[in-house]
Image (cartoon, rainbow, N blue to C red; front, side, top):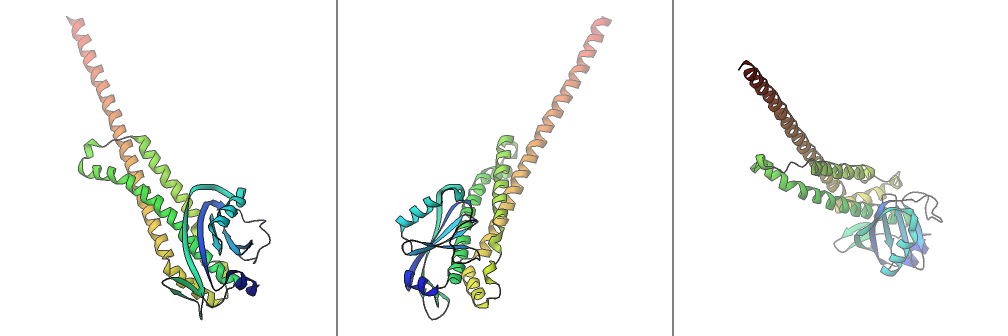
Length: 266
């Protein structure tokens, strides 16, 4: 198997991770190069692909034309496909030991397990990249309102519909992040393989997977908390308006009663 991989890929090849959709259904994909996830398959005529359930495809030694054809052939396996694909690219080179260099990922031999480790890290990186952009957009959307809350609290555009929309966006982002919670977990293929575990740890540090995941979680918590706070303030203000109307109606009834009593007495 390893000799076939090396013969097809050579001693230096490109790897690309593409986030194509919300999920990828990997059940029933055959033939596989390994029973352990991520799902590794051969792609004719000269490359390989890893399919990850989190919605990412990682391609080894496949040119852009083959890439487009392969993603199209996945068809219904991609759940909620994205119009815009986030991508991550790197080069892999065979060397004396598993290592990292500024221009390439170094592996001491081309094996299915090493390709799977690379696929895991690049897929997590590209999935995080999408979440980072979505959370940054949410941050930008609440920043103007937050500044008005600080500078002009009496002139806020208290539109409850906008508040609910922001909360909905935060909940969706939170749900998507929970669905990809395995980002912070080590893959099963590392069990009882200390050399691969060290290789994975170096790659994970290089792409700052855990740090980026923690930042996304913190930003998401801020966005969700801010949106809920603004909604509560909006509801409080609406309640105060209702109370003012009630007080006005009571005063009106009192004035009307006094007028009627005075009119009758006259």
